[in-house]
Image (tube, rainbow, N blue to C red):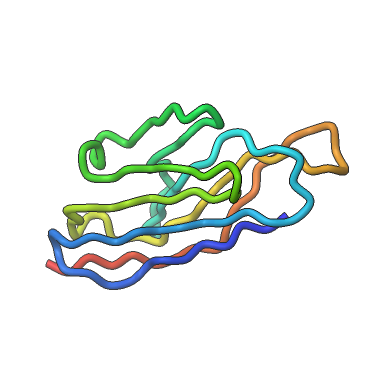
Length: 120
C-alpha cells in the first residue's frame, strides 16, 4: 500500500491550496483518513481527520478555513485550505488506517510529505 500526496506549494497569505492524496495497492478497506503537518523541531500535529462515514474533525486553528473530504470509490482524501496564514507553513502528510487484502488487521500508513509555504 502506498499513499501518494500532491498539491503543496508557495502561496501568499490569504490564498488557497488544495492537497490531494491517493491510496493504492492491495486495499481491502480504509478506515480513517487524515492530514498532519510538521514544522522542523516540533511534533507532528493532526490538522484534519475524516472517518469512513464522513465525520470530520479539525484542529482549532484551521476551523472555518480548511475542509477535508474523501472519495471512497477512488481511495482519495483532499484538504482544501483557504485563507492561508504564515503559521500554516509546514510539511503536510496524509495518513490512512487501512486493512489490506492479505491481513485481518488494519494499520497506519503515511504518505510522503508535501511542503506548504505561506508568505506574509
